[in-house]
Image 1 (cartoon, helix red, strand yellow):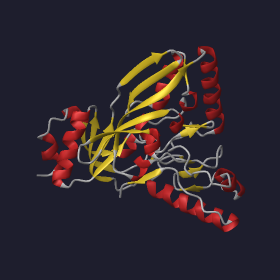
Image 2: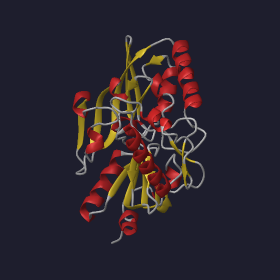
Image 3: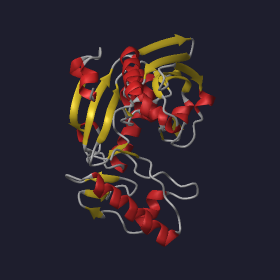
Length: 303
């Protein structure tokens, strides 16, 4: 049987299944060729069923969250794309400590805003980050001097065999924009965050400050996948790109932002090929001038 026949005979909610859907509809870059099959996953049971179908039939699986750190190539993605939308939320308070158990499909920024309104502090740094909890954990997302590893206590995930595991923070091997989930084929289901009770006014003021900073310093008015390049160990990547005179540089519809040189934006109808060429051009220019190798922060998938 082909993928469509296999999926149509499953117990997956039919309205959550799409075929040959453009991935530009599911990425903040607004770029990407078609996914052979895209399924929105709302429960562990559905996820286990798809994992089993994929394993038995040797179907390639790709997992995405909100698509905010993603560049999908122009020929799209073969096999099944799983868009994780598990949005469980439990908040438990004990004295000044607050435990938040949250599904991996919940949006990070929205959760930060929600707990902030309840007077819970610790997530202010995440209020402007557009990804999901799962995506943020996978890449140890951060801003304003804080990262996901600072608030995570446990992560629950499922492996390709459908086995569920729960690990402590130290076992997730969090590093700068990296974790065990970047390296292994594990799908995050939920996480427990350790936060604290705080002053609502102070929390709201800090989030407002961070959001205004983001709007003033980052090209939020254009489609992008966030910061394109990682910072260096001994240099600021965006400064090196700027010092190469590359702000505004365009290849096709892809452009290095005039506002922040660390961002490549979709200035209009950009193709993945445009972005990839601009990434390579930028790397070459920085190396030629400063002898520094810069690395991409965005995830690049597809064909």
